[in-house]
Amino acid sequence: MNTLKSLIIVFLGGGIGSCIRFLISKLFYTNSNSFPWGTFIANLVGCFLFGFFSSWFIKNFRSEWMIFFTIGICGGLTTFSTFSSEALIMYKNQNWLLFFKYSISSFIFGLLMIKIGYDSFKLL
Image (cartoon, rainbow, N blue to C red; front, side, top):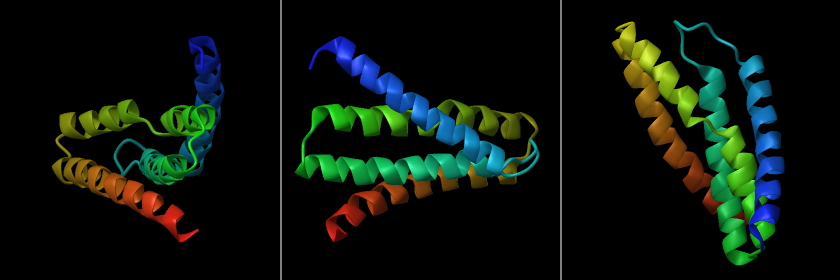
């Protein structure tokens, strides 16, 4: 597959993933002093989908669709930069409990969701 085609596929999938993330963040909006549910949920959904799609594409390799769903949609849906920014604000505000809850739960549940997504394809 040529590079231009791959870029277009990532661009389209990333746009879809980013729009989904935006809608989730609006649906689960919280102020800066509380747990950032929108980012947390978007990242967990993205991790689940990444695991699911990865498992599916291992069995049914289609490079264009793999790029579209994993790098494009899941890449646009998940947001490490927003997670890091929110965690930094908690850290700077010395909101230690929230900082640790958010950081640790994002990491642990992110791994768990990738595993669940990966394993759920096997059930189909």
